[in-house]
Amino acid sequence: MKESFWGVLVVMLGIVSIAFIIFFQTVSNTDEQNYILLKEVTEAAMYDAVDLASYRSTGNVRIDREKFVENFIRRFAESVTLGNTYVIKIYDVNETPPKVSLEVSSKIDSNVTGEKMEFNIVNRLDAILETPY
Image 1 (cartoon, one colour):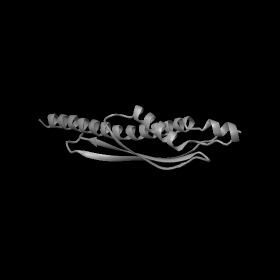
Image 2 (cartoon, rainbow, N blue to C red):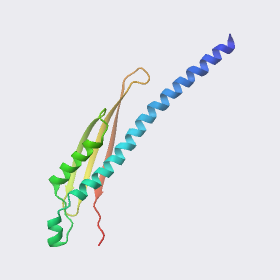
Image 3 (cartoon, rainbow, N blue to C red):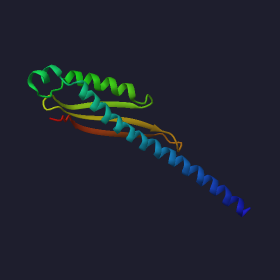
């Protein structure tokens, strides 16, 4: 009888540990995916927003603010997970020199332990578009 209780304890401990591993893996994967997505989408939107007419006439690299915001939101919306809620805050867009400051926050709901928990994951990025001479 004593050995069977030890067996039940080991099985229950294994199930609880697997639940915690799945829970923390979901949170950390979401944070990493959001950061990589934010970085890649910002870079692509900045390249798309470069004002070629200004570059050809003056030689200075300049981005168009409205075009950047439009491209960023479109690209980000195409690539995110639909199960999460995202809030995008664009703090600063400098046209010359090209620099942007962004913040993307997402909410994750979890119900692994039987209790509903919410996590807010916030990723901030300041990006400067560098070009070779």
